[in-house]
Image (cartoon, rainbow, N blue to C red):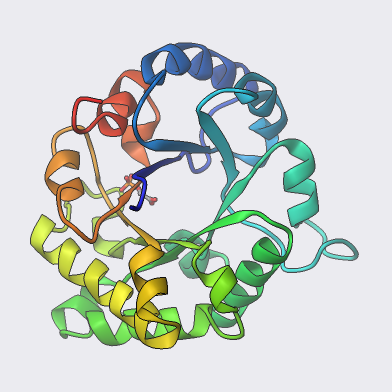
Length: 251
Ligand code: PGA
């Protein structure tokens, strides 16, 4: 059984004080929720958030990670640093990092490896552009991204990865993939993992949908058999909204 996983991606939003206010409001709302919940906050908010989330049902994540553990990498933050600050998961290969900050399939693979070696749960993002979709290249793009990201990753580690299918044209646009489309691509990702590792690995790995997921469309998406959760940007910024996604089925 794959436990639903709902992660908020705050992107570059919120001060430390805003983070504290958010968590104070959010924790009572999600107490006893069925889904596993993560908040992926900016680096500067990790430590303050970790202190408040200790011993709760909400885990803490970051939004990127260095591929090295330490050294001359100005501006980077490593896996041991994230663990030290209280994070247990990390988003890797988000399309905004691929598009604006030079992440490639190769660096995504290196970051994924660093997360796994250090015991952080990676949330690996893949997804096609609008143009690639119009050219019917979605599957080819996803296949390439998945093969590259999982290169030299063992089967034991692969099942610890959470994959987020995020069609780039749906991110922050209010245009969600239809549940049918999202389901098809998530099923395809599962098939690729199954083909590379084993059917058991394919059946075990958790796959999320991301891209304008919100309280209105969450349930329809989550009801699909290959969608195990969501990576939510805009709709995760207000506790009263995000809880409606977390409790998409009322619990
Ligand atoms: P969105 O962002 O929910 O605002 O579309 C999702 C993401 O980029 O992870």
